Image (cartoon, rainbow, N blue to C red; front, top):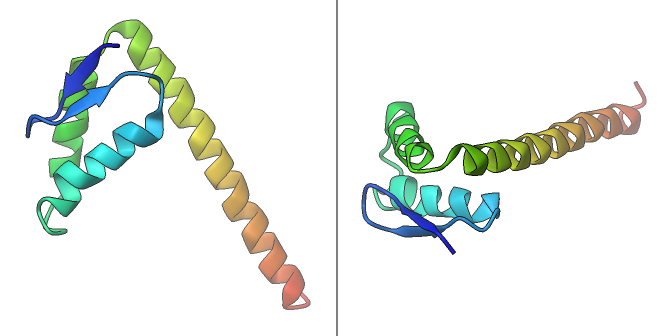
Length: 89
């Protein structure tokens, strides 16, 4: 299995698991800096990772990301609707 590296040298296996990439980003950018990171820091790290991927890998991870974000969006919308129902609105 192919791997890519963060700017700190951590390996990320490209096995289609978006959560692995997200967890590594959290550990290497956010936790390592003790929450002292900026939007630009995260963008640079993501650009670094994406730059190491082939076109097919980028496409696969985009599909996975869109799916995950759609599910999250739907859950947030449903949660808001359920709260409104619970308030009697």
